[in-house]
Image (cartoon, rainbow, N blue to C red; front, side):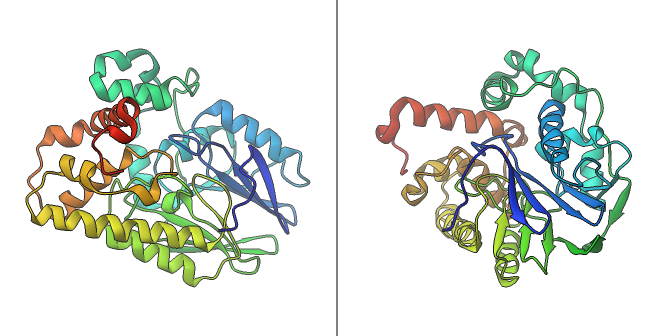
Length: 328
């Protein structure tokens, strides 16, 4: 796999195309991108906080033509890809209709209160605080700029001399997952359809859609792949994500049919091949989504406590390591 250097900040892909990368790529540490051509710009996603987005925009402003953002596309409705929207003043903000609907449900004040109120949320609060609440500054988060232009399935844009194809390949990670494909430069921004060297998380599914999305991206034959998280890479990483979901689906299905619970299955599947990937606790969320897809009778409190279950799983791994009893 041809990973680029996993370093913070702007990466020059060439011909006015830039990736913005944030190690270590775990919870909330997302990537973004910028396209600049003939005095026009398109920003691909903002970041998890206003302060991080402000630093990114300042870095992009040092690029010739990068000081003013004309248009912004939000690839999907997770806050680490749209919280900073309000800093892109006057820009046209583009998303699918479904992404816009999901974003409209986001409560910024409640989200920002996590840093202060996590202790009242049990295991879920402890996990959210450890992975995000203590790491991101949301003190100035009282509102988020929403999309003002929406589309269904696909949209063709022209940024100066650069053609950009926006294609919704969801539902998979979320209810709508848009890629930005630059056919002339053979560059694709995948949003969170690719977590490079990290466990993905399937909030929505079905899993077949995510596998098909990976196949779609590979068939484009891009030379550079900018993931939603992790280092810039190539299609080998996309194939790895496809294979991850095929493996987890097949392993989980056998356990589902044998009557094993989703919590047990998440701890029983041998994930040794992915030991080097970050955020291993996401396996339990992915198994939960698969069981839900297959019609399992799941208690409402299981869905509400999914972050709590990931936190418990993570603590088990940390406390016992290879002796924890998990098949990892």
